Length: 289
Ligand code: KIV
Image (tube, rainbow, N blue to C red; front, side, top):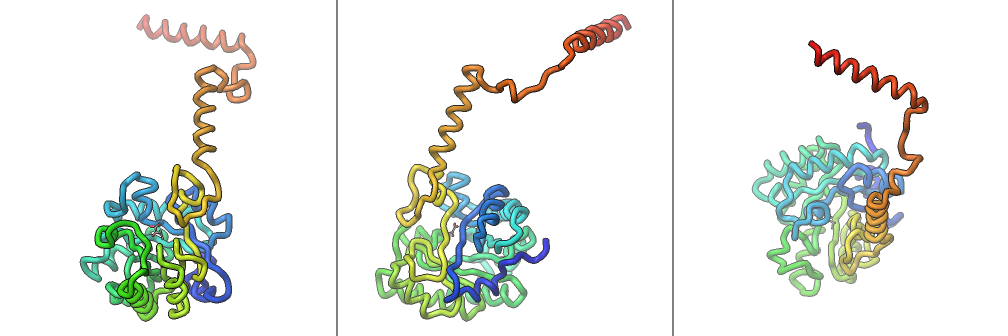
């Protein structure tokens, strides 16, 4: 795969000049559409554990799953930057293990990796960047730590939390990360962080005062009955898909599908009859042996 048009350097250069667009994708057709739509960053998020595999959280997502989906997405993308998530416990045990796992994602076709947290992983980010692996950080609501956070909730309401979010963003900037996701952070805090760091901030549920926005594929397209309150549904695919499936089912039950345009027949019926006759002679010949 030759270098894609959108690089981490280009994302860095967009801060203050152009808003960054990012969307998750977990398979080939979605990635193809996102790339064709001109999205800047196509992100294989560990949210796939929830929206694709139906888990209650992201804690069971494995490196093998991330590699598998990154490969499919990577095959589709020509222009956008392909970013892959490091799943829970794939980088917390040691810096060495984090490096080994990040390399697997890069070899699967990612242009960069994302980790949750910042200050706790400054050394890992520094080592990855030094060896040529671009890194995006993620602070605020970090779903891999939702047990500690006490659920999926807004962050940045207390002094401690504001301090932690800012500390993460600054540590990421220092270590050479090219951007940071701010998830479910009060908009005032997201604004403060955006002003305080030189790297782009990409918000999800963090308001408008950030350098870019990210949404989860299934939320953006209305694939489930409900989506998080901060997500805007740009389509209602759930009802479009259900309606198509119901109409398909009814057509088959009623004998309307396949229609005459969906199948092919012998034009020469006599030739077909002769063929059957020949076949049965052949069959009879076999029986005689
Ligand atoms: O995994 C994911 O989809 C994410 C986004 C919410 C940023 O981390």
